[in-house]
Length: 102
Image 1 (spheres, helix red, strand yellow):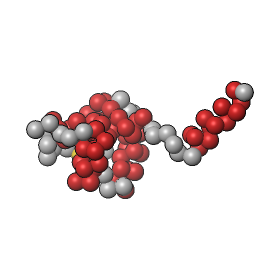
Image 2 (cartoon, rainbow, N blue to C red):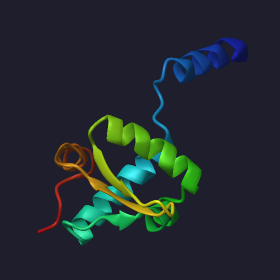
Image 3 (cartoon, rainbow, N blue to C red):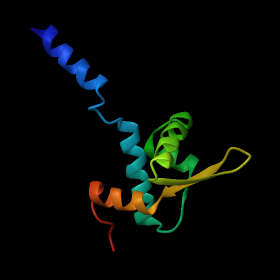
């Protein structure tokens, strides 16, 4: 019996039903950054630390979020950079995480 339930679990993972917790953590921290410091981007180093995501994973997820129109990044030649939510990203996060505090 466990084999059937294991197969169901694997199908759910393969079909993309699960959301990557690192992606959620990154969006949560970008939303927090917007709420605490509106109009200011957070450095990638701070975002990585606050989200608990290694820099390589952060950059990979940010690429997808930028491609999806939810995040805006600036990158310097020395490898540093910053990220913030786009207008669409702010609207999305307000729906998912709740409205920003006044």
